[in-house]
Image (cartoon, rainbow over all chains, first blue to last red; front, side):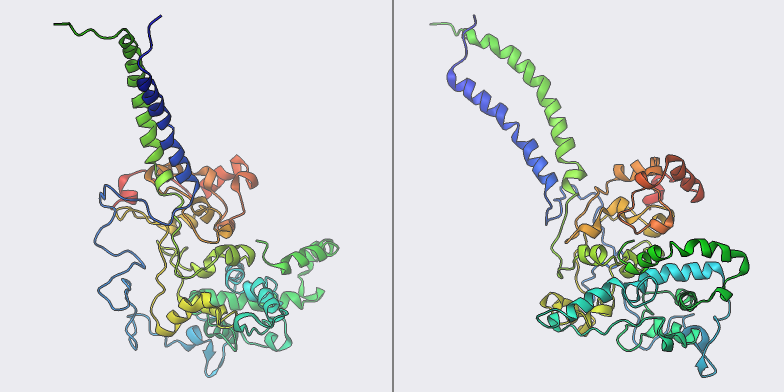
Length: 246
Length: 217
């Protein structure tokens, strides 16, 4: 039997061995918890270069923007919006009834309009256009809260696109509303591309037709399909107007 | 004069030293690989933001599409933080007096930007293009995680080069139809068969390059 080393040496060794467990535990904890500070960079490599990527900060300008905003009153080359049909929805002082030159009504255009409508418009107007989008519902709930409208909320029920007056709106007017807003609705001219706003206007027209259609409007060859769907119509219709569920 | 003699217990030192020499390098490798991995250092970065904006409420509960605010994601390299106007589309009327919105209102009045903290940052020598990915079947959730469940956004993925290459070498598991790009709850592993995901790869003609110059210029 070999005699053991002195007590202090065994203790030190044991403590050192146990201490090895600490770093993995610390690392596991770091991995499992969010951190408000970015990791410390010991080696910078070329991670941080003296250049500006989009939406970064440039302290040389008073507003701090690296991306400069167009000087007020200037127009970039090629961005004059003189075509009133295309950019205002107006032809000869009246609302345009047609799409601007170069665009034509097609399934693709309506599909694009539907997709963009579902992104930008459905939040208030609802997927089927009845003014029952999720944001509208929440805002209406805030309005009717028992303590009175919270934090100065002053919401007006979003317009149903199937309101008789709205159904009368010409295509150009719908485009113009999407662009510049109306009453309480903000304009979406900066958020949605110009052609997409026309596609949305075309889709809104289609949506209005679809919700006020008679059997005579349906091409005879696909009427059979509708009849089959009629019995099940209640469920998907409710689903479509519920919103929120993507 | 007495000669120095090693005590008899010092015979134990040799096996101890051999054991330590064998385990300490393994331990060190593990320590560096685990501790200095981007999964440890980069993932979980969750800076305080100037405005307590909740993605869980807006994108989750209200179901607002990602593109409602991040309008350039399909057209440009940057998904972009929205203009203050986008907030004010609704917040001119919804809770305009809320103290949480003070900085948004200030920005709206002065025209100065809200100074959001950037969460996802690539090194400056790496160039990522959102539009190239979202238009060809890589959804938001693949890199950003369930943003619609985050009160405060944190970094879900390591954004390391190895992590990028994982998908560039084998993109199929992360492909989805473009109609589901912003649907964070939609899981291609559940919804699509392997054949359907491979068909998507053909449909979008995805041949992800692993050349240096693809991302580094």
